[in-house]
Length: 88
Image (tube, rainbow, N blue to C red):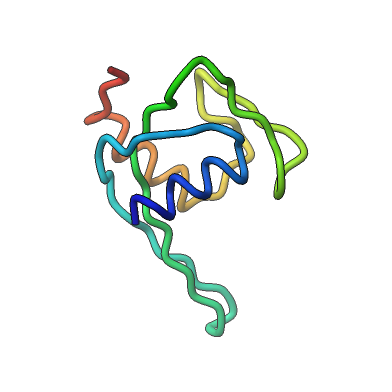
């Protein structure tokens, strides 16, 4: 898992990371045919390089509050885990 997260951070955001904590997972199903499981990790960016969109996104945004348009499962996960989150 650690190598996969590091590879995705490098290829999709252009940064190197270390995994600090496994936060949990959530499942998505659609139409009864598609099923995905997302694993969520707290990571620390190594160095002073800022993330930038590379392969699958045209932009990256950071938020102080959750945006109004957010995938419901993502919102639920963030709200449940934010109370136990420490930024350090």
